[in-house]
Image (cartoon, rainbow, N blue to C red; front, side, top):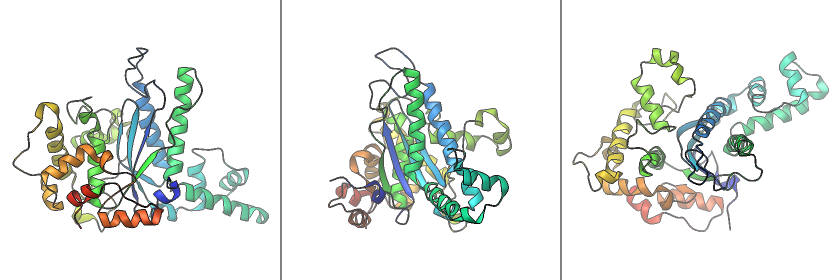
Length: 335
């Protein structure tokens, strides 16, 4: 029996989620279609640009992304603190960037006030929209519906474009978040699409590397950054109590992903550096276990990833009867 989406995404348990969606048709989402000879590379830009827009509207941060030929990955964080702090004006203003607003909300935004007999209706609208602004389901709905409409129009056809709504995995701890981000960032290299991180187009790791290499002043002024958006930053463990972000150093993450990418490339098969990356030492993860999970994250885990005890608790909450990934969790996530 499938588990309801409402129980698979619970920000009170964890704010981090890995989501993936795949095309249902033979035609490719992006890239070269070997059947009709057409190139759909431009659709990858559609997706990144839409993610950029949605990240600015929703109270949801993007940790990682990778747009592939017939599917895409996102690692998202629900920012419940920001969501709860939104004023009614902010809620309405954000929502109107995506949808036509209710006349009562539009009038309130224009006039700054509303008649007494309409205040309850306005409060109900604001409460509903505020809840949706922290919803991954609504984030994905807005993303997938627009891409499907544009692709169908371009292909001059009708019908479903995606396999389903989307698949999700709850990431219960920092090790699960780190291994999932690494899996997403290395997708093009693992698929043999590109030989290096710097050439991994339409991925978060390419964006992070470019922004890191570019001075902050010129990064703001550069036209090449027009299509980029602010990813959830790496803040380092020493700043985690003061700054919201990913509690690792980006330099350490870059060292680990570079090391992992070199180890899983076909032309480097079997090569493992004698110097284990600093981040693996901090997390107490063996090199062999890390490489195995970097390549098989989706196969190892189903709807949830983390320490085995946390996975069991989450599945019990969600109404499931078993967890996928027990043997893997003991290797990578020791209790």
